[in-house]
Length: 268
Image (tube, rainbow, N blue to C red):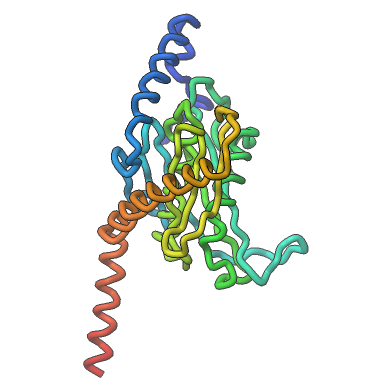
């Protein structure tokens, strides 16, 4: 017998006194500041693929205080529409916060409520970072859907963007979507900048400045220096992403399947 699920969930902080809640938030910000001293972003990252059985590909990541789950479906055929370019695949990215992930509760289940403005902005930023990495022309008349769910929010929106880009790129690879390269991402704390990067092509796909940016004017040389440092850290994260992907069950099954096909070819 099925049981009725609640229409909405509440964060425990909702029931605290405002002063107590504010103190907890301030302490958490201090802890985030301490964590930013570690510039090697590949440390402290937990990454796993094949998390959702029904999806074509999926991944789960923990980075800082952020926990993100990404599921990819497709490529699948879409009905003919005038607003689509059928020569290439249509990429659809939908980012959502779980109702229990934020300090401010979000009413209704995911299926009952529309995307908030923040969720729409995050969806656009993540899609912009990942689109250059996908061989969309290989999948005409089809659509690739990416659903990203933030299970635990981070006060710092940069970590959410960074974690989502990494998780989505891993999920696309896990779904056997043809890619030019994996997209790595790193947040450079001093100027609140998130850089997404494809190491094999030496191409920056996206640069995002959060609302918390210091607003300081940077010289061209200093900005180039920050970009260069971010790219070096992206390469470290990229190595970790490759390691996780190559040691996943998906890759082992693919490798075993190819070995089996080669054996059949040799026998014949």
